[in-house]
Amino acid sequence: MRGIRSHKEAGLVCAESAYDFGNVSSSTAGLEHAFTLKNTTSHTIKITRTLTSCGCTTGILPRTTVAAGESLIFQVKTDWKGRDGRQTALVTLETDDSACHAVSLTVSASITNPVSVWPRVLDFGTLPPGLSMERSFEILPGTSDSPFRIVKVQATNPSIQFINASAPTDLQPSGGARKFTVKVLVPSRRGMVDGQIIITTSVADRPLIVSVVARSTGSITAAPTSVLFNAGDAAAAKTAKVRVHVRTNNHTFKLNAAIHSTTDDAVFSAEEVVSVAEPGGILATVTVHCNGSDHRLHVATLRVGGDADSIDIPLVVTGTKG
Image 1: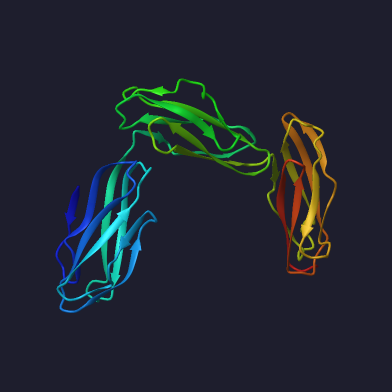
Image 2: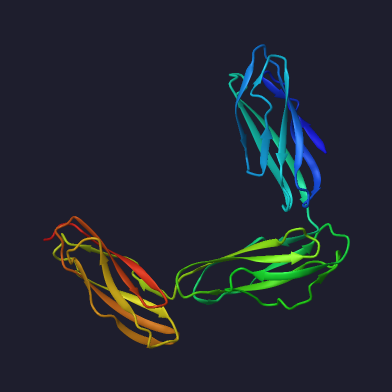
């Protein structure tokens, strides 16, 4: 346990502004340290507010005023149970003293675990529907001096799939890491896939957690992704074609197109979808017409989709009707 001494200055002074608890087991429920603050001025100082850098840390202030020449014991409590690695928390006391507006105190520790996991997040990025590429995480022996067992590894989302979950689960302290390989089944509908991998061992007092996240592009893509018409230019095109690709092995897939507008006037219209089957999907074309507008700006949405997914394409008309 080590303290770091601050430089001497007038105001509310703490001779030991930082404290290191050293190496601490992750099973330790809480840590406490008492800082002594002294008013080195000739007038009373009022502590107006106490701030902490995280929710795991609190400060106990016995009173809010410190008379000239008096000292105050400020107790800092922090709970890093279940954490891993270097931890630091900052506590700030704000005062009404013009020469010393705030006092900053720091507590820190190196949290040790009998077993740890790395990385703690598997981010697969943005992917098309289907089975993703592989990502892996490792369970590593930490401070445990005896063999231990990986009791259970499970995922909270069925889209998270293990490639080698049946491999041996006993670990020796000097035997190195145990690797797990994971894939994600990315859904056809665009959006987020997330979940957690929960690892239970025979030595850790709480499960190890690996967060998993992936984003689906969806089964439907379109080009262009937006359509702009200029109603004020008589020579400007009043028709646009949107090409849509659907990733599917079902060549009888029914693709629908509809205009969604916030107003009642029929500024836009869409023709029937023309679809052509191709290897790995369907290629479709939607023809959009701009029927003119008396508005300087009109916005609607072309929604193209089926049962599994859909995509929204903004439609905008600017200018006045010619």
